[in-house]
Length: 481
Ligand code: ZN
Ligand code: CU
Image (cartoon, rainbow, N blue to C red):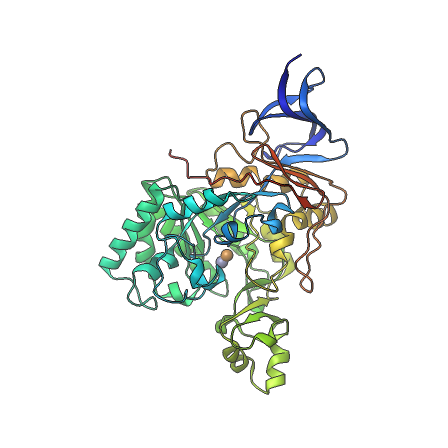
């Protein structure tokens, strides 16, 4: 008998990523692909694993990350592979590592991706080459950030772009798209992009259509005027006739709690006439740079880092204000530039958004934060363990679909996200009874429990809490239509 396969995973409970029910099967891998599914008793393989009692699912796709420079600087990507993540999409929220040429320090919030020395990719091609050279542990696909383009070409990023500035941004976006970028992201809530009128973003989004690109947006606001911001996003994407993805859909701020019923109704209505989706992280706290506009006494704001007052990291803003005998806002000013976690979401809103049929899971983790929001290490096991198993928000196949098949289809990642013959063997084996996140707000850097094995492109990459010797991630270029 010849050895037809490199590996057979026997007796697994297969959740294939399509949303379909769990079924029992053996799954065979040859080289980097899934080559057989079914009862494979009569076949021999170089290696055999008995997966009885475990779920085999497609490797998870983290559609919302800020891992742009980390996939190169810390290529083992332990925070992600330890959750069963096999692909990350970088370049979200308007900020990307490429194409970027900085004149000085990176503007807020590009500083979330690293310091000046980390922005060394003047073209998208340079970035792809760097990823391919280091070969991270997970696959990488990338969006181009609107704020990154602005910082390259605008005389003043706190102003709208001029006609000629829009022209050079468009040209650079076109170039990046032809080099394999997935699309454009924007971060219109941040000061560095806030002055961009809808027309500026529309002009760029129009360029995406030529390339089968996607428009993903951290909207102009997630607070009271969220409906207006959503309508702006719909109109912008519709202008270019491109798919829209709303980033980390939420209703922020105490006055806004409960309104996801309204936002999801609007999203559902729009989904009948244009292609729309959103991503969401499974926590009722958000995190970013410390934004003076978000300073409030309505809920806890936790300072995760501060360049000017590093000793204050790890304290509540209210504590710091009291210590300095300042108002919250004056304390926040003194801490700048800084990072924060805002406990400003309602748990029921988080559930509603997670449950929505067009919602994908994206961590929005901030890998360069010394005390990161726990979403960086815990997002995927938390959806499976807490939201699916404990809260019964959805069945496991539906939860898995939101982090695999749905994500691959929305982002046009070919031959990934589903366990099908011919697809790449990005796989995760986990224990459905024990999987759970361990990362907490107090102690956020912790591997999750219940992830047994992870394969990337057919190669074992994580096993029982440890990374394997070699890395097998690839750069995933946009698929031409
Ligand atoms: Zn964002
Ligand atoms: Cu983000």
